[in-house]
Length: 71
Figure (tube, rainbow, N blue to C red):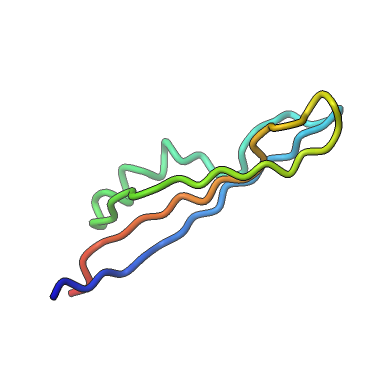
């Protein structure tokens, strides 16, 4: 039976009046290295924790879930 190992990378950003709305991780630059290490993206889970009328429903955190065969 195939066994897997998993990696979760959490990306966060601040939402608000004085925020630049940028993510704390540049996933586009991380993906090639993860692929070379054998990691396969299986899911991205978005969460919204912003308050206020202007930010309601804004994604403030993403969990990027990867897997690879456990050798």
